[in-house]
Image (cartoon, rainbow, N blue to C red):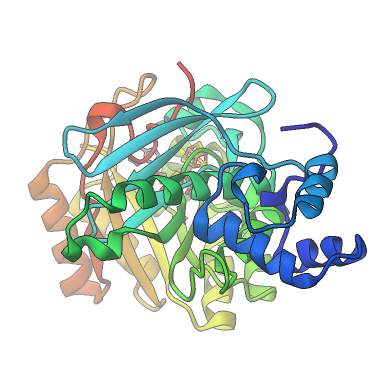
Length: 357
Ligand code: SAH
Ligand code: SF4
């Protein structure tokens, strides 16, 4: 990507229309350009043959198209999970995952190269912080996945038609999205655009480690995302041992922010709980989180621990996960799901994205 030139993937439709109009061209060309970017997933300006040459020449001279080159692609033995290592302009690289196991195509996108939050069981955290991603670098990941789906679609059966286009985006890849608030929110705006990806209500989920000011801001600005909060422990002391930033945003403050978020928006929050054998998977733990969430609009997502290089813990056993769910449901009326373990052979599971290694 050319430095200092605006990335087309980093612009909203309004911004592109304003730019093209300011050059004296008809807004019709902006609409076409948008369609090429997000419907056709064109990989270059040259492929946009219905755009007049003079519009393309101006775009070529003054903007860039931040397509991210695929440095590595891995397909899991499960046949449903693909992981891409995408190169950034500065030599760094990030990982993006395409998951098809829900019957719908979901992209798990990264919001940062690395992560500054340092959760002990997470490979991204273990690798440390590289930098924030720009809006265009977030969108380019979704475009890449969508392009892959379009290319594969001719080989798909009719019954798989729902998988031909990207249906869901989860901001659960590398990085902490609320640590990179504005570029992430602009990306949400682009993803929701009805003339582009058109990812409407409920199709974008943002997962946070618990950045309290970010949660409050999401609520105040009524941002149209599903919110997932990574809890993992129901006491400050236990949480601090897993999630170092609990020091900055203690559990009490986090729960106050969640209460206020649900109160203001009327939305349920997903609470993620990485289940670690012998650490946070006992009946007492289930009761502690049940008490914490009983009066909130909540659903718990239990994620059996995935292996990472620098953390020795083991995933909770299947029976422990089932018992945990039973207690949450029967004693506290809190619904929960256990996340399917997929893509572990290619290190594409939750918390396994470490970038180029
Ligand atoms: N930074 C955000 C989103 C990315 S991580 C966050 O922390 O919420 C997505 C989810 O995977 C989080 O709930 C995170 O706690 C969880 N996770 C991290 N490492 C994991 C591991 N080794 N096994 C299972 N889940 C893990
Ligand atoms: Fe960062 Fe999330 Fe990993 Fe924690 S779990 S280190 S916040 S990516």
